[in-house]
Length: 313
Image (cartoon, rainbow, N blue to C red):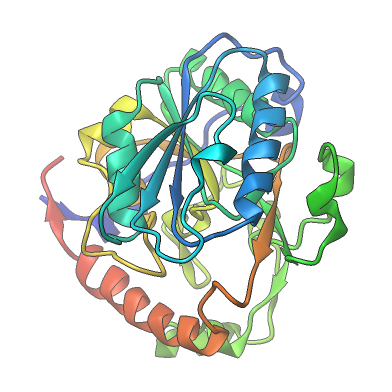
């Protein structure tokens, strides 16, 4: 028996190839389900679906889209928005993204599940790039978690109304690619040592291939944000999906991917081609001060409870 923390320290994430070189390959035909939790997102969701289907068209094969309306009350999901065969599932009450994603896992029929949030506008090649990287990992005898990166922007961004989004339209400002560690990011006393440091986490770890244990303030699963990532369905089913102890804002996706890395030896691979716009709407999202407080509580539970639990592998 080992703790999850010990297993993350032992994990070797060297997936054995250059993502820059692989990204131009033609993907194999693989079945995909897209799972989108929806709660009070409103009109921006129409554009989320629009850009998602541009990316599906670019992939060139049918993709199952499952939308879980998680008990929305304000601006509920309008069925008239669903024009491309999307499958809606309705929760009668709000259960949170953790349970909404688990509902999506149970309903999905694809070999790969692409999780995305309802305020994400994906670039045209995003789906294709995820499939390319999954196929390359499988050829090398590995199962992978693929992550995309974001440009965080406001609901007033004119690109929301573009007919298509390409890589050249995005100016990624994702903390995983480039950041200066902020005082509000502190999850524990030890994190204070990083305040003011300029970090390029993906580059510094050779596109995550050199990641070992804890790097600076983060563990490898912390590099997986819920807005846009994909997994092999059988792998996330094998670890019983997302842990419902992580409900509400913060760390909602971290439990499942931690179990996939520690118990199933999945590798984490960044997609450097094909990102997304993350639309931040102050009317819908929690205030930053409230997010910071919730983050500290979730950080404490993840590092001091969840990672210290022993698992049988």
